[in-house]
Image 1 (cartoon, rainbow, N blue to C red):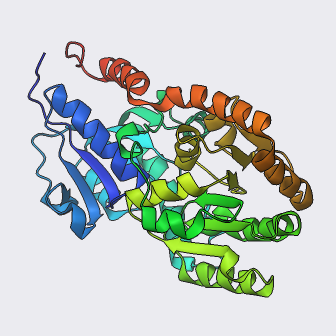
Image 2: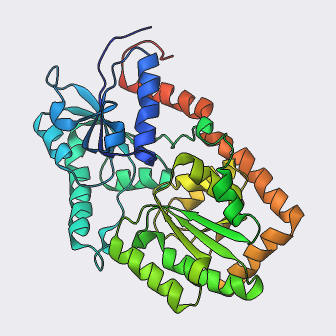
Image 3: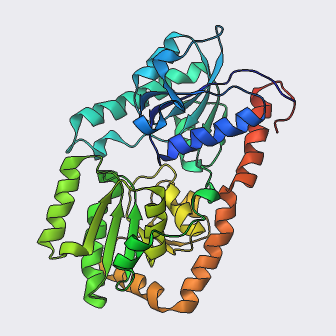
Length: 361
């Protein structure tokens, strides 16, 4: 039944290709189809999204105690603003990276992350239901004192990945390899430096091996250090730092990849893991934080960072067709958990616990 109610969403930064932004757009579509107005507001808005996302200062609350959806991932002025308005929250927690990872590189960002953890506690009393996008994040909510919690995973919008590669880019790299891939912002918790070190050992077995590091250079000092490390190890052009890429280029790098490798020590969810599973790239990932929750029984979890052993495993996945097909088959089954039909059922059930309206569409 159409409700014609408002259920606005708030995110800190709206940007194309950002996992939280994409999640908010998907929920907006579901809410619109159920009869809700679901405008998205943000503290910062990428120019490409102006018109689709408004600045949070434009939010006009309709009544005291109005329910809003807040995607929480970092300290932000908009959180304090909403608290001052005495909103009620359906909180979606995307995890806050421990500030200690950033202290050596960016004290300002360290303080912002610490502020986010403090705000997580402040939000507790006004939160109707706190949702996490992984079991790992739900545990953090419970440790912060939240009594009503649940899990709503990130959704993989298959339409964004069912496309052909950019042939110019694909042709540039398809004739050599093997190609290792990692997708994520260049930040210390992702441990891209350990992937560069791993490549050094892989190239002792396969001299033409290459590493794609796809993601924004979020911290320029860290990105510069990665380039210096690659040069010191004599890897030269074997390490490709792409910066931000278009969706088609992102799909192209997945099409080029022989193995997806993660050494990250902190993932609240790990969307690139499900992107890899969907696109048939075998996953090797260090077992940290939410990684095991996301992979389930699929992929290969790394319990130790033994570069020589991992390098041998990377090359085995490239050359052993039966092993590779077995891993990919498991992953294709697991990724169904994160496709829209399954997650939307979970969302509908969650909304029934928050609202008094009839079932959502």
